[in-house]
Length: 327
Ligand code: F6P
Figure 1 (cartoon, rainbow, N blue to C red):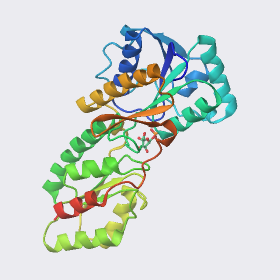
Figure 2 (figure 1 turned 30 degrees about the vertical axis):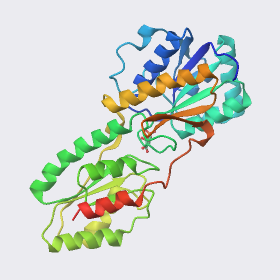
Figure 3 (figure 1 turned 90 degrees about the horizontal axis):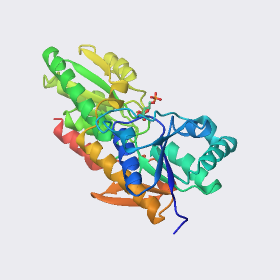
């Protein structure tokens, strides 16, 4: 059991994700419920370094549960990688009496928090706010479900025009290091091929499958590519396919940042609310420097330092499903 906390700062860091606002609301309202003073830190660690911090009341988080983005804004802060930056941030927290932090972000943000909590005596709690779902220790990350739904809606629309023209479409979704958005949205839209960073892309296999389908007069084919796929993304895939399938009509659609915006799905709002509530419970119970996840629909805690990238964990079964269903 650590020292008692009384003033808590909450921040969002790294790429934003739909549901971050719902998490901020849950953290702030739970903290206030227990009589804690709550502070919002603007632009992630940058705001901690620059003392861009504001007191938050219940009304500060009114009418935000349904909004994408983050009212606290976010940033990727290089200064926080350096000791001097972290020291500045610490001094600002001490001046205000802030003695606990809730960090909503990805694994880079957690790495910063781990360093910070080791160097200075400020307990940190991490909540996974990322559309990529590339963090171990949780079945869901805040924003993933919304991003997949956004991708599915967009891909369904592309499929209409793809089908009308008998075309091959290569759709690039987000995921610099992780293929979860590609895999989930690809299966949900009936993609014939899904290319992800976790598996080496064998373009010969892709070409062979398309040629085989061409022989069967199946001309409509959907390929979903994660932006971080080792082959180099949708444009690169298109240029190779054009060469090998000269008769095929091939188009590219890159979905980009629309996947990061929009109103969070009900699942993301619920996930964020549960995680936010439990972040405060952890601080009150002296469960410090942990990552709060959800596994098998139960809260799951682990040391913040273990919440690293979940790269390479995609099960072969998922890819088998893609292959069998795409015939
Ligand atoms: O937050 C994750 C992510 O959306 C990745 O999927 C993507 O590669 C990256 O962020 C894009 O970051 P930025 O908005 O800084 O270009």
